[in-house]
Image (cartoon, rainbow, N blue to C red):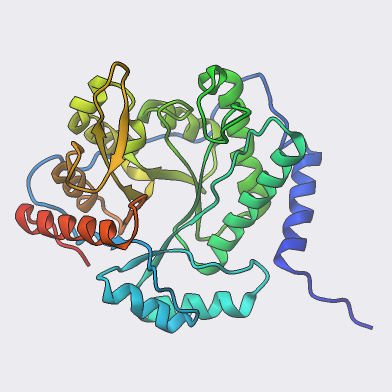
Length: 332
């Protein structure tokens, strides 16, 4: 009797166990010296709008099961990028169907989101989350997505993404680096990248912190998923978000593989309270955001996120299209 072909999950489990056995999942207290040289290639801040149109994307609410119809549904909304449809890692046939259908209609799968706490205080939950994100990267690579994305995690015991005094510590940084390495080394992706989203109360919390993490992780498959609204955590960043956007693109441009589109407003009370709002109703400098994104030398998707239902997504999409027309930025 011949041996059965191993599933992706089985292969990942073996690789993951080997990485753990070598100490790849351990949390080192000693900083690691980077081996990769980090070079800077800033995108232009002015001049022509960019080298190509922006690939816009967002969710489809009346989502058909058939991959062909699903790809067409994205195109009907004017989207050429999509969030990864639900599919099991071992369902190779459906993965291939989705990949072929989306490629046929020129809809890029921008990301596989795996939103969970990689630093959960419960060891069993932490291990399960690490496994889930590892499988997410494997799925992204199999289906041709640009990246698998999560936040680096949180030491908060009550809210998986919540604030904690140790979220800005060296311990947090080293744990995030080790997790990124373990995930990438278990999958060894050939197409997809693994990314952490920056957060206002957890590392990486700035372009410089992300650069330090890129150096420390030291893996070609580690990249940047840009969500600038997440970085607006104080009045100076709120009022000077144009400078913040420029800093993100100046320093992280070579590694950006996908972006989120949200907006931020200040709800005035006795404490600082920022909240996410429909695009165009907040303060984020979308003219600068779109120009800098269009100027990147790669096709980087911009995904509308966190809107409250189809109507807000429609308003946000229309805002971007109208603004693009005014400033000379085209959308695919």
